[in-house]
Structures are given as structure tokens and as C-alpha cells.
Length: 385
Image (cartoon, rainbow, N blue to C red; front, side):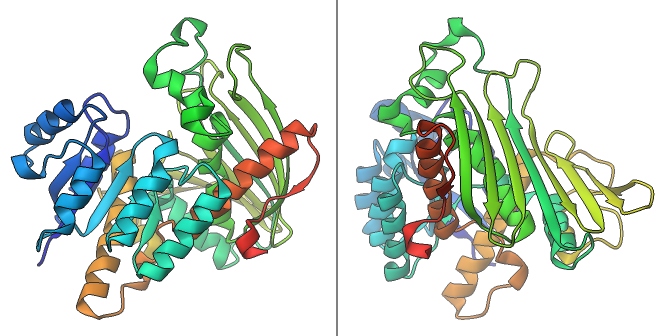
């Protein structure tokens, strides 16, 4: 089978997200790690790229050098992952899309809604994939949860409650740590910190599982460490396109919480609950019956869950495996397009630039709502109104 050439921008030595992407891309043998511009320091990026096995001429000093180098190659990369600070996502992703590359961009996709809309239109015009790494939707039981909701197992959805709260930025003495500081710097992070960093994972999860989009929202932001310009805690109430009521809490100062991504969906005839820290179990409560625990990897799950299960029942499932499902979906789709065939329909679950645009619109709507003391605002991007 033909392997796809894969390249990465950012994710250098010491990066939090880089190793997860490299593990994920290597899971299924679909990709060869062929090129990279891995660090803002050109020398460090070249050295680390070669340390990871890249050919010297494809261990680039920066993304512009990589764009020029790969554009001129017959064996150019088929997919580029952009894992750099938020403010750089738009420029890099647009340049590669325009040059005919498929892109997987880390979230948030851009800083402004205008940039996000432009990426949607650029990808459409170029006829290329622009995906966004809401990687937690790759978990097998999240996909099973989506399937259960879609087939009506819990009836019409009344309420969805999502959380993404941790305490890893609670220490005021850690304010100047570069890995923490940039997230609260508007010049690098944009108009929002915690909601844009973690909250939109939970918000996208709510849309992914319910099959509904966020239509309006009301937000309250707080900087619990007063020196921070941007928020480290947020509460967002929202209403969805199908009438579902939504509640979302996200925080980086919740000491005692480790990762804290959870999703609960309550319908007319049942409820579902899943937590990313215990990803092998999905809790299902049918109305008037006993609680059921659905185990990842057991029999009689949905095709979406079966396809996304990587290890046998009872063994732990980790984040790189979930990310790996996003890479496998993208790989199947790119290979199908190159071969002129129809992709496997089960591979159509990767988050798209349109999802990224909806998230950016929600971020700016939440910022405006918080500034207006929680006033309800339209959360839809202008392109989709």
C-alpha cells in the first residue's frame, strides 16, 4: 500500500503536543514522517528533525523554507500538521493550502473569525482538506455516544453538559513559564485563553455528539490570577440548533482536576456520560432502568466505535490513539481522493475547517458576551447565518 508523506510545523523538542501527533501519525502505517520545521529556532529545528530521522534537506529551519522546499519536490508531503502558537495558524495554513497541500491545524484554527472564514474558502477553492485537531472526538466511545444519540437511543436531546477543567496553571509562581505565559498573552493567544484553549474542545464535543450546532450563548469570564490579561476560568450557557440546552465550564485553576474533559447528554428516554480520564467506559442510564456500563472493545457496539477501537477490551486507551483515528480518517480520505474512489463513509468524522470556523465564532461571541455581563449573543459565524 502506498504511504502518504507527512510533515509537521512546530511540535519541537519539549513541546506538549508534538509527541502525540508523531505517535498518532505513525499508528497505522499510513504515513512516512518526511519533512518538518519543528522549532522557532532554525538550528534547533533542523537538529531535532534529523534526530527524529528526517533527511537533512527536509529538516527545515522555518515554515517558509519548508513550503518552498516541499513545493518543488515530486515526493512532496501529502499532509502538513500545523502545531504552532495560535496567532501563526492562519498564515501558515493558508500558505500551504494555496500551494496545494492538505492541512491539519491545531486548535483554535485562527485568531479571528475573518481569518477562519478565509481558510474555509481557501480550502474550498484549492480543493484541499483543511482539518482541525479536535482530537478527542477520535475516542471510540465518543463515536459510539454520537451513534447512540443519532439512532435515538436516548430520545430527543434535552440537555448537554460539558467540562474541560484542570488546575495546571493555578500556581502564581509559574506565571513566567514560557509554556504557560503565551496562553494568556493576547499577542500570541488572541482574544481568549482558557475558553479558546480548552473550552472549545468541550463545545465542539457537544456539537459532535448531539449533531447540533451552537446558535446562541451567554458567557462569564474570570481571571482568577489578577495579573492575567485573559481569562483562566469561564462558564458558558448555550442553546443549540435542535433546541438542546447546553452548559459548559472550563478552567485552568481548578486544583485537583487533572485533565477534566467530560461530556454528559440527557435525552427524553435516557442519559449518557463519558470522561476522557476514564475513556474505556460510557455510562448509559435508560429511563426507569438500571445504569449500564458500556465497555470499549466489547461486542455489539456501533461500526463507528469498532473502527476506532485500537486495543482489545480491558486495556487502556490513550490520547495518541484518539488522535490516531483523526489521522487514519484523513489518510483514508486523502488516499481515496488521490485514487479517484469514494472514501469509507466511516472516515468522514474528522473535524473540518467549517468546525474550526464555528469554534472561532463562538470564542468571539463568548468574549463579547462576557464583556456585556453575560448578555445572550448569536454564536453562529456570519458565513453560516
